[in-house]
Image (tube, rainbow, N blue to C red; front, side):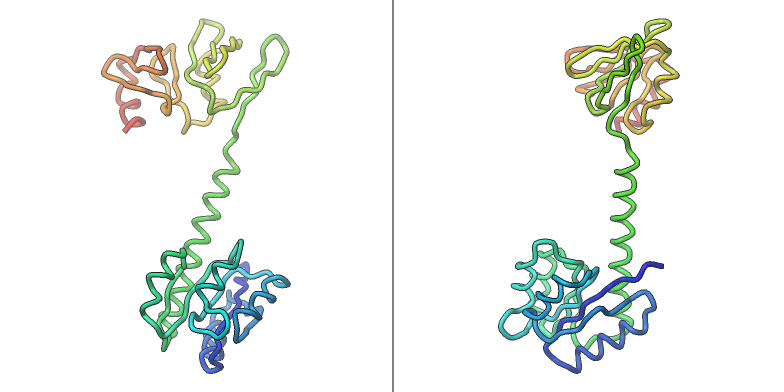
Length: 233
């Protein structure tokens, strides 16, 4: 299990010690540093990789809110403070959580779990984005033509060939509509007829019998109506 590298910033030694103790009770947390001022923390962040900050607000020289605003790419932040009035500012800055002192361990643990949940969600989104191709190559007369997936408006069957209609071009490819559909991401295209498949994002209007894409109207096969209606919401 990957460690969560955290930095604890608080100008009060008892609060600093308590947070470090709590962090030590969670195996996944690794305290890479503690400091009693935001100025020192600024220097530490230059030298150490940090995933999560536990940050007090009321500190000398530079308070926590102003400190956050100095960071170009801040780590995730959990605010720790004795002042309720800072809660709104904290959430405006996309803070993971807001812990009001005195902090109980169960509340500390809940804040860490919120960070874990957000990290898992972010990682899943990044993985999904990386796994999605943005283009495909079609073989035309032994030459591979690159087509950007987001440029494809619809695909038309022509017996032993298909015609790929894009925003700026039309490409005739040997094959059938079924085989072409297997090569394309299922979440980006939907078949609406035995002779047509479309990119739902480009549908201007539709009814029971046809869809309109750009200035072209295409027929909807009876057996494809329900699937299309579900995709278009």
